Length: 468
Image (cartoon, rainbow, N blue to C red; front, side, top):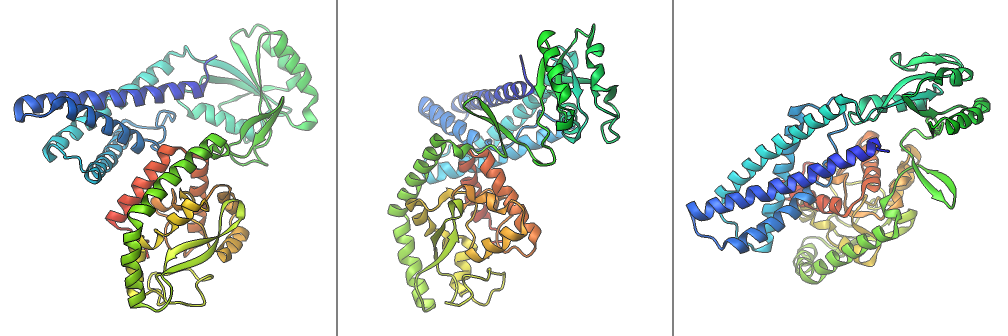
């Protein structure tokens, strides 16, 4: 049986494959034209190299773009804007990769033309997919008629999800409950007491799906309803009555034959994902520490020593994975002071040295944390580690604050690349940072890490107003 999630996955797969075909076909055709009309090129070498690099960069930059196919409210112009944003991000990222790798770029004009063509064709492709999905859903061939048993908040939430999703396969006929629920959607008909379920279903051969969520004191209905479904070829779906106790999405897993509900899906709870991320961290941090870092340490260390008395490194205990303390390394950017482990840096902090202000604005002060990455205390990407005093304070003030410690802290993170960087003057700023950290933990992929690294480099080049 086809599910809503399966439809969404198929649409997303079609979109990605189509993107890659358009990306490579457009490049191939433009290279052919450029070779014949504009200049002679080593075509085979240039084409294969560019196709490979462009495809990998596009996948990396599109990893966290999200899905725009689900909502009924999404408009064509919003799809086009998403394409434009992806193209700009992709082109800048690819240009940086080419510049750092030393591969010569044919011509700036060539790529201006190429990215414009790409933008036009991808926009048209997105609109075609959207229209096709709307047409497919309008035919109603994928529709499954359903009945709800129970009218609680969780059933109301389920109904809203089914109604808002364009690719939803369910159309709800109505709901049974002990009494009508005034807060339930008026568009969903009240069908009566659960005692009348069997009589209502007589002759209703088009209704095949029953979603049931009754409270414990109404459990006497469950056995008769499940037996009726089993004996009349109806699909019974139990909906956990957990909307109040679990005010968020929950995930299902199995322990033997026992179903377990989890508060969140965590990709890094899988050993293979943790191993992949750790190998990625060791490789990148190791290369950095034996190539670029010694030169940076030599230059920065001399300037720190000449401009301010004290050590080159500033070390501070911070909260790491599972709440375990670790010693975090930074280039010292402040005068030696007694408030270093309790007071957060501010815009015009008098404790900062002149050179230290430059280190902080350029993020160079964070580079020694690659030592922490190589040691295993941190990851290149993850929630930023906080000083112990702040962990203690925010754990009391912010709901779910400690959840961010289920994964290793990072040198950079999703929160830092999306506006949550620097001093937190208001509690809401830290709450936003925590939400972003939890989102990253629930959506981790290696491509997402690559995207965050790219965003971090782009922010350093363009500058950040919160970097101080």
